[in-house]
Length: 534
Image 1 (spheres, rainbow, N blue to C red):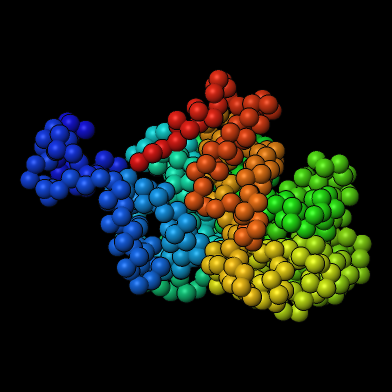
Image 2: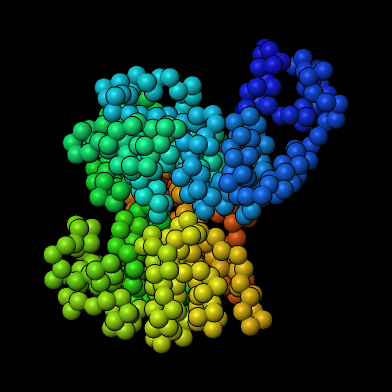
């Protein structure tokens, strides 16, 4: 650092410390006169930053302020997140990131991440040389076609990889220089974006078919060659493409799909925790999904694996899992099912949603619809008729498209509901009791899984990693959490949670002989020492 020009130090986001530079540092680096007199502590900088964020009128303004902070003062950005994670996570990710993605072309300032278009075919590996960091360990990539529950946002979807990687660093300590957000900007079929003169993306209809998959394959191959230790996380792809890519690469590339597998681990952890309240074993539950896309079927696949581990056959496990989509109960007689739905298409007469609840009598209802209000009062009433403590997971996000609100869940069930959601809801007071609904946030698991996988240099990411992550997370839910109405631990403990999951994942990798690095004597200490501290 001493060899750099003073002004370069003040403009380098990774080295900049604002007025926290000490007197000795100012003298050594030639910063005298370039900073105010006061020397502040890092905690004072954080206090000033969070006070400024709280004073802003809207969450999107806070998102923008944090984005600017990340561009100019990286250490303060991450320290502010880590110190105030429960308050700041909704500002940098769901639900605010949904609005940020919708407005991304209008609010983005400095470009972050790496963009690939169809014009780059045959040159992706060469262009990756332009990225300044050479030791990339985690890549989050999207094509922007199914951003949260908002649909095709094209290049505006870059807000998702940026946000996810911020969480990798804040929640699991992956050093920011090891992170790379990628946008596969293959066009958009959203006419509003194509007509927007400020749209920053590739202004064409979406690439599809063989040409699309060939471009993705070139990207994956280029990454493996240039960054052989990198984990690729696929994010917010359309369901058929998400499954095609996952099935193509999961057994030969260090990769996973967070919408399918990360969501599954979080949901499995929450359902496992709920069994401590309803006093039933996981293997005895009947679970119904409203929505049959990648998130819901990913949850079901992992739950089926968990049930098999509890002694059921795969066929018996799948019989515990039922799906309802816009056309009603998913049954074998329907001719319109997609391949990922077929394992859960049971022999049963067709039924609508309410009738299906009465016929199946599920203990757990999981919503992954992307449609607001689909857990109607009538549906919740039916769940109450069949369960003393109905378990309701309203997982769609952002908050505006949740299947029901926390307030509705507690009021409609007269305080009996065991409720979790995909986006955050505040505390709810009903008849003198205050509930703290848990958020089934993927941030509970994907950072820890990634940390464990890259630490031991795993060759691939099998389902066992997600099962052990879910088990570890469920085991960290305390009696007090359950009494408060939450199926998850407090996000304030996320660094400890991620470390515990990373240790479990790495242990599993060593046991399965998937790790390329030798196991350290003290695995937990070694992973903790790797974690970034700003």
